[in-house]
Image 1 (cartoon, helix red, strand yellow):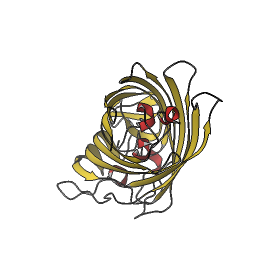
Image 2: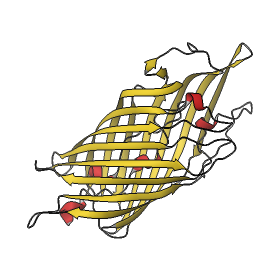
Image 3: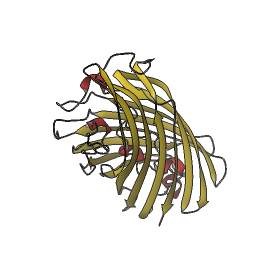
Length: 321
């Protein structure tokens, strides 16, 4: 059982990522920095993970094509959004089968667009920092796969939880203009989170892989806005170079439906994307590890015109106590 515990999926930090692309460019990485990807354990206890991300979205895109700012006439011509995100995760493992995680993002975001007001272009900007929406996610291991006389080879399980409407939806700039809803730190809605995972040791020594699917479904509408349902699909390999250093490679998919409501922009929201995310982790002690990833898009399709990024970076530290 101890051999398997190093590869059991304990939590999914990507649950706190509302989108990798959005009308205004408000985004979190889709990188899956769950503790499994860095070598974890299923013994009872607490774990804390703190992750920092940087995403500069300065590439307007229509469908799968790059466009210039204002090339396609819109009420708002999006220019750029810079996302500097912090994501804190507090996890408790009750036993090898049950656990729960709390996820709280903190958003530090700058955004500029051109408001085309009756033919007059007006530059509007926002620069704010605020906590986002809290997520509470439970997990249950359904099955363990073993061979007689050998260490456990794999495990499968479920995720279930809620995203709570704790983040602000009324952030304004210096002259009092309210930011668009897709730019706000929170969505204002309560969302259901459901998912499943599978993790397995491979025949090659020190190599393992995982696959995971998660769907986030808004259950409510708030002040004329309802974000689109999102589905994330992740798979990845992890190779232990030695007892301290590991290499990771992930393929991350994101599919999001259009937003809806009178305060939404359904024509310019939603889409689909695939990302490739290489990274590494390094164990500082038996109870602490640091990690880093760089994510690059390999395919992106957006509805209408939206901001995208040429890449995103994430670094973090995980500690068991």
